Image (cartoon, rainbow, N blue to C red; front, side):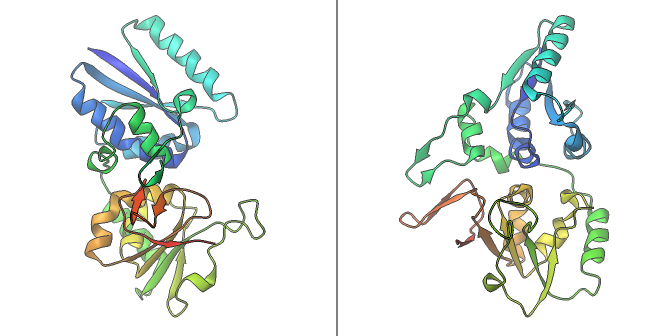
Length: 256
């Protein structure tokens, strides 16, 4: 038996992308005792929350103000000095290789799973966190206090190089309903009810889009109209094959 340390990309969306990967490894590699995953310090609390159901998954914090690679390597050397049996796996980074298939370019999470020869279906089949429905209800009542029909939009006017930032144009969504946007003071993991009870969901590429894949069954059950705005990259749609790469949701694609 050995402990496995995994250093994948450390954006919040990447943490969600790799949730299924880590759980797949833990379930399918019999010799793994515990899995240690690295996280930026600002995401440690959310990452611990995401894995709180599985005590064999541990989170190691990294200070984003210093060189990530050097910190990881130093920590691995320290852990190995105490337990030479540990194993280390780096996902992406220098092993990140762009690729494509019959549907077009591969998404970053497809590349991660391909590197380890893990079926991409594990991205959703093994992805899990215990939802806190009380917190989801609290956030729902905060953002939709009147309980009326609404559209959820996630963009970021204060971010991005193009004029106006990352903005989803008003012309692309209904204006006859209340507009609800992401509340930065709340954990994205508590937006589950807000997302799945909207009439329409409009998302740019972001950690919320990554999280939305986990919620697909509820989107389908509630007949939510899903719109993906691709001005930040993300999943790709092939109009010839009429298939998506990098997502399990049947989006309405909105391009600029």
